[in-house]
Image (cartoon, rainbow, N blue to C red; front, side):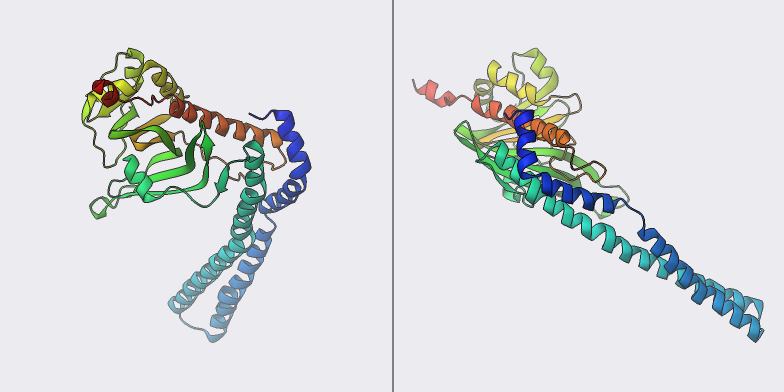
Length: 332
């Protein structure tokens, strides 16, 4: 864990120039001078498509309904031209610079700070988990479920590999329910951690009252001796013995710590050689916020601190999985 002083010193030396340059671009994004161009364009369109045709109609002495039709068509053309100019200006002065700034921010700032925070981390800002990973976790593989993500980070902790990314999962209604709005099922961090041992059957731990829409082999609903844990979480597995032996009090304590706020939902699957953890917190780490100054290093440090804390919580679950299995003890 890096201290705030060391973080600020590093940012001062290696990032200050880039942050100041990006801050100028961010401020330009929030300026509205281009609206004057839009207003000028709309005035010109109104003059050529509305004022001029009306003057010509008055000179030619046409019927009133003909004049009204001309004026209506002219207004539609003026409004359509104004919307076209507006869209072109937004694309030129807002959308394109913002996309370039976001890419620059992740490459120059986030990548550099992650390397400082943990030199062994590998970072790919545009990648996220594959469909195979999601299907193996059983979290979000049901029909009509779509997901997008970014900020894939990979590395090693506790001598075991891990991958983590930001993920947003939505459920898009089919043709029979086309009027229903898209439902956001998950927004937060999802991790795949290498397990210290192999699990023949899946063991699922979910926040109580919430079950992800995936291809799950739920099996039995298991009540653990820890009543406080049972009030917050639900456990399922086809093998009661496997789940009961795995979920010892020390591991339960670290699983409960993942739910660090009342609104946070936790999804965990222990299956084969991996531990799949989803934390539905509504937080998307390392995203550019154009309403906040990029020179505010305190905010950057707090974001890295929160991400590191979440990664530590996941690592504690990984570290406290027993390497022994029920089968090993039954053979003895």
